[in-house]
Length: 628
Ligand code: ADP
Image 1: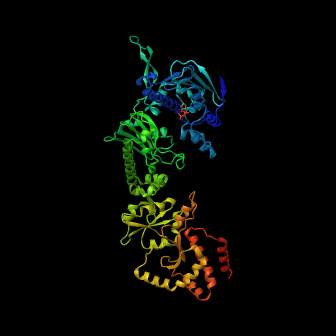
Image 2: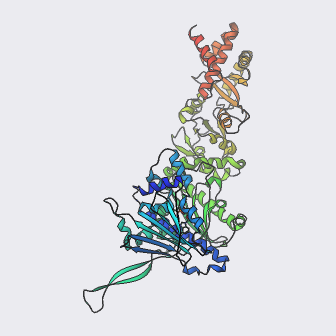
Image 3: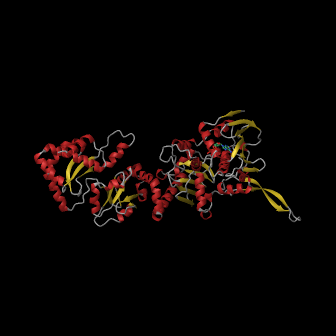
């Protein structure tokens, strides 16, 4: 026998457990039982193909023993057990180190949070125990081992006597304190209630000797102890119950425990499907993305059960990427128990289930959008970006499916609206869906083009996320109405008469713009007068498919080696005083005209949210003018 140290991060977690002030210490029982249940599942699987297992399906069980005198709780299973090596590996290192690291890197070691958010498995036993032993004999092994630990000092592993395959975890409860009455865990009713609350759906029987007092027949006032073995869990998984039998609280608790969230889900989708594919599903939409959602470590997928037995933890094929935020499970009657991962991928049944679930999720989201707008907005804040990428990805293959799930902030309404709502509210004469792009709605409002569109009585959708414009570009139109960036050079709100006037003004100023353009070199494709600016002197618009915002996004992407360039046009207000000034300079002072061209371009950049190419030159020119 030798004493070993815990791996350093396990030790940290262990310390945290021992000193925990977490108020729901009771979860230790759920963790131990869930490990036992997994171990039984593993042996059960083996029994399907290996005749040596020698246990019948109905003999598997988890047995709980309470011992008030010794202050111990024992949880015994006849599952697969652990070899010496496994014992060392599994209980000497913390499996969930990834999630644990995340928190401590952020410098916050709030143990309450970690326990609540991630569930910490076996080590949670140390919240209530001063010593824990694990006696185990692996299937196929002749020797049994006992793992012993009193906490942070490390653990020992030694051979021990154990006849049967399986594992017994013995928890030696800590002494009671003023705040924590650990003895309550020795009470049969407390334990029985805890199992009902947290482990009812465990599909193997959890049994305990229950002692009740019964009057002795014929002897009035005398009672005797009767001991009977009781099964404490119903073994009916929550998803197999009918909706009317399950309360919101049951759903929420189940979700939080199973999917390690500390918040209730925003939506529960429980359904039963019969027909070409027969299955039950229970899905949840979380309120917030899990901490790793936007990292490459995140794995999407639903748990896959076959007739109540878990066969895969994260079946990715059941969820499209744009609904990857959905958590939950599917229990199918039609899948074979020992189907391999590779075979599953080609399983037509699985595809069929996936399609059905996708429709279900979509229709639930649509319902939420229609009937619970506030919740939907909260959902969209958390996961809308996923839907937008869904519209854009795969060359817009899913755009049709997803377009009605999009919402954008409306300038007119001051709140989020759907594309349908935008189109329905369009006044007579408007045939285009206008949108503005920028970091914030305030920034977009500052774009000179905004006023012109608003003055016409047209609404503007604020597109504030990088992916937004790409998504609407893929859509091209909604209900026959084309999308247009208000910074597009084609934005033309003039009457025929105004158009004619502007055309003449531009023709007259052609040579002047040539001079100004040569001062700016490659920076702009053209310079011209516009009517749409009202009180603003200048703006930048873009020709062709790439807007200023798209230029910014594309160039900021990792691996962007080519410099994507928007084709810019410098537009100058034909009615602003500056127009006359330019004309005068063109006549008398071309050198100053060149400087003005640079200054106006710099101003247009600032207003459009583009950084100035040469701030030093710009500033020098401004000062030169100021001191003239
Ligand atoms: P998790 O269960 O999330 O993997 P735990 O810390 O609870 O994390 O357990 C670590 C590992 O120890 C388990 O994955 C399992 O391999 C092993 N283990 C725990 N309890 C048992 C048990 N009763 N029987 C067999 N193996 C077990």
